[in-house]
Length: 244
Ligand code: ADP
Ligand code: MG
Image 1 (cartoon, helix red, strand yellow):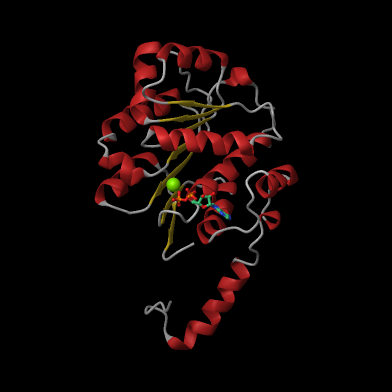
Image 2 (spheres, protein in one colour; image 1 turned 90 degrees about the horizontal axis):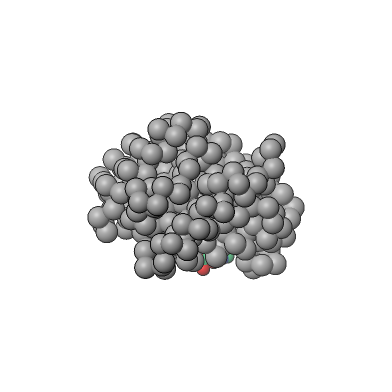
């Protein structure tokens, strides 16, 4: 893949620079807890990082917001899930269940909510004190409410269901939230959830804790870009073209 904007005379320099930035393909060379790396290898069966993970994980570990565009199947979930778990397990004050939501992950569908929750469940295995949980339409609201009351630290939800709990069960305390992830943002907008996402973001903003925000999408439509403008603060823009 040739970038036409780079003059030929600079190409060797650029490729050398790229090599210096992306020196490793291995999770073990990222700045991660060794137990997290071991879990990636042994439980999730991944050892090498994909292109989008290589670009995104260091940015998120540095504390910046990010908007990430790369094609479906390129590995965006671990791009945010790995730095998120790394940051929560490294927190100075050890995470307690009663802290409630520290991360809110919004995905468009129940299936994705379930899948994403399962990935977090695997990733936090060595860090048993961090509790992930999932809320999604179609489940019993009452049992979800009970689980929320007990405490969910990494809260994966569809937009509508989270708004439902915010408005009707009053069981979501947002004051501890340090991470907001809007995954599959293009699909979330396609499904008509813009208003619900806005309600959630407004609630988070009025809860007032300082927060890292990530938006991931396969396409950067006008709507997605507008959502990024509203939800992210001075984000690093990461675009990966082509297959993983
Ligand atoms: P996207 O969100 O970009 O569509 P996913 O995060 O759903 O992509 O990942 C797509 C597939 O690739 C999943 O089956 C996932 O397990 C796998 N995968 C992700 N990261 C890696 C990796 N570093 N090495 C091997 N497989 C991976
Ligand atoms: Mg995805």
